[in-house]
Length: 181
Image 1 (cartoon, helix red, strand yellow):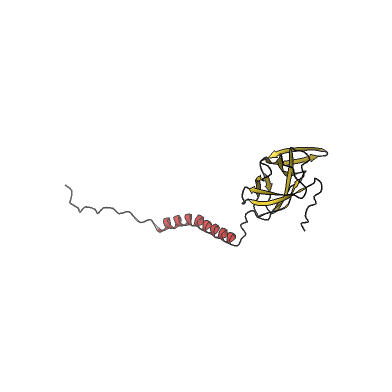
Image 2 (cartoon, helix red, strand yellow; image 1 turned 30 degrees about the vertical axis):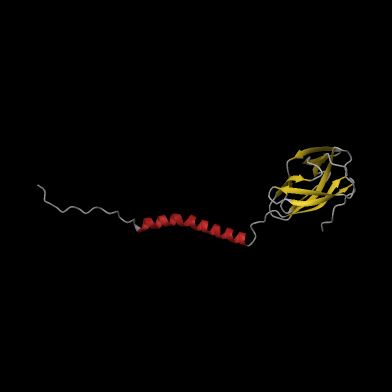
């Protein structure tokens, strides 16, 4: 027969040992401190204006070639982007025609090639200078135009708000770009 003994009290969980708790804290501290430092640096970078700026666009040199045939003519603009982000010209409208598109021309020697494109890129801190031998806006079936006539346009961009501007009708080959310096 066994002697009677008092029942054991229910076991309570043991607190973790101090070395295990410190090891766990050390394993989490590195990533938490790195994330806090990154967030602080990004906040300072943004607050000081060094995180970049959205595209800032301006339009100049608007012109439309006097049509040499009834089928089409072209419009040209210089679009400056003084922001730190790229943008794209994605559509154009004008009351003189609904048949509007973008074309791009390249030349090798005397041989030229033209293709239509859905958008025209405007680089950050750069410009899109439209010309008859580069990027331009095709205007299908234009009405009869006269030199000096002013045509309204609305240019729409991927990241920037639309810009309303005008272009003057000129004879092909008579335009001289504005000085930029």
